[in-house]
Image 1 (cartoon, rainbow, N blue to C red):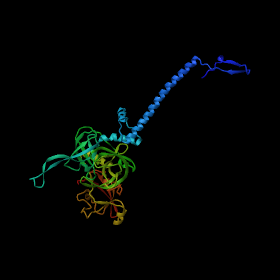
Image 2 (cartoon, rainbow, N blue to C red):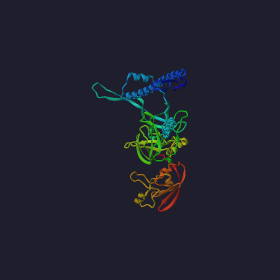
Image 3 (cartoon, rainbow, N blue to C red):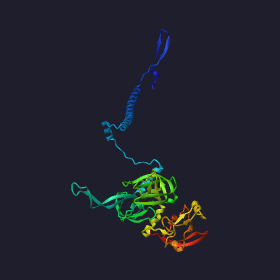
Image 4 (cartoon, helix red, strand yellow):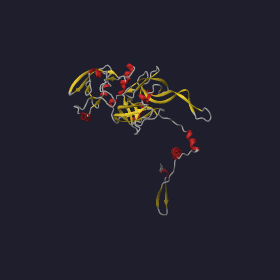
Length: 435
């Protein structure tokens, strides 16, 4: 601010024109000179600071832009490499981007310690080639035996003492040895406790006294199509605890699966598009609560990402029976039957379109009633229609096979039977299936 000092003003008289002019004279004080010096000094300092900051920011932006371009062009320049080497890399923990992603990560971390690889080994002969003389054709002979890995699968621990649920086709070879590899890299020998005679399920036991992490079993009867699921397994027999994510694509499927030297029809299985590869067999299918809702079993070779899983509720009884009795047992009634629907009713001129119609099979030679069975004992015969099993109506959606699996040998139940248009009731004690 310029200060006009009136005392310093002078008057000059122009004698020629006889006029008087007012001409102020500006004079700077010592205080003002100090202020000017301070302002110049501050301006220099501020200019230097802001210039440095602007140069640093623009230089940093320029460096990273150049670095990005050189990386994309796959060009390596010495000065860039030197700068990169001097960079301090700070690793940060990954932050999930969505609630679902966070849930999946948490489920995998929690369940993985209870998912195991099953390694199958067997003593196989060592075959060597030899020649009787230089001009003879090659011959072969056995030179001892060696243990070789012949396959693998997945399982998951269902009890703290090391009981493992897996597929029956994984442990089908009775002469093979089975080793369990846990997620922390430890190996344990295991033995097969039981194989389900009618489902692709089996139970192993780790031969060790340690206490193991276990999975939590869910309720497969409450599943919905479109529900998100997670599959974990030993993909291709070499990629331990591979994780894939998908949805439930279908429920209540019936398929014919083959593998491991067996062919089996699987009823009421879950269809999923979560990737299931060779080696995933026996691994868990999980919901987003971290509960096992299925056992991964088969994959379609014709389709893409079409896998099938046995509902966990079908395995719960097997687990309990092995814990209680040391084996898997099925109740036995002793009839051959066809579940009725409207078409079968019409074709055979029957009075009802539901129930189990007892009939023989001439092509296979199977009789309608098994000799010595509980059905023969109570007097059931060919042509009878079992309408209800212990009060449960038999339909295509609630077959006799599904109903009877809920019971145990020795259970006493009541059958409601239609015979020649008349309803009759029979009390029968179920036997144990031996086949």
